[in-house]
Amino acid sequence: MATACALALAVMSGTASAQTTLAPVNERALVTGPAVHVWTNGYGECWHSGFGPAPSPNLVCGPQPIAQYVAPTRAAQPAPVVVAAATPQPVREKVTLDADALFDFDKAVLRPEGRAALDAFVSKLQGVELGMITAVGHTDRLGSERYNQRLSDKRAAAVKSYLVAQGIEQDRVRAEGRGEAQPVTRTGECPGAKSANVIACLQPDRRVDVDVVGTRTTQ
Image: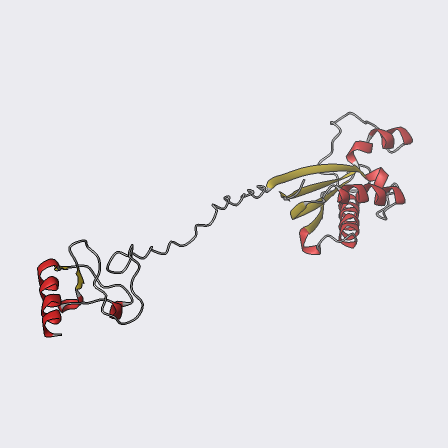
């Protein structure tokens, strides 16, 4: 028995060499030296200690390299489509309404035809963010200047009241009268005193100008 042990030790010392290879996970099954070096024979095979199952003949001594975890890559997401907001367009529009279509002669109460004309005007304001609406009343030269001023004030106020009744903010509508001060007809174009012909000739002077200022946000 002593001779066999001595022979075994001699073979180990003569043919085995220390290889600086890290021990595998089942390190108890292998013969290790200092610093956990695994002993191999001259063929590079690991020495088995007798503890646990023998390593596979093809097993390289030491732990196998562990693959680094690589997080799965996500498919590139398409860039979001950015839709530019429509640039508000400034609105400035002046509408001249025939006072004879809005009112009876020498009156300040809106006629049905006048209300229909203002309804059409309001429908055109869809999509417009209003700044201000100004209604300006005008008269012809017939009658006194003071009377014509009051009549133009009342007609402008009647237009404002109707627009507010249609949903336009009261603070967005301004009314003023200018009487006979700004006629459309030229001097001497309709001469003579009051008559049916002169009244018809001066018809362009009887009007209400509606001036709108705002921005259009939708088409």
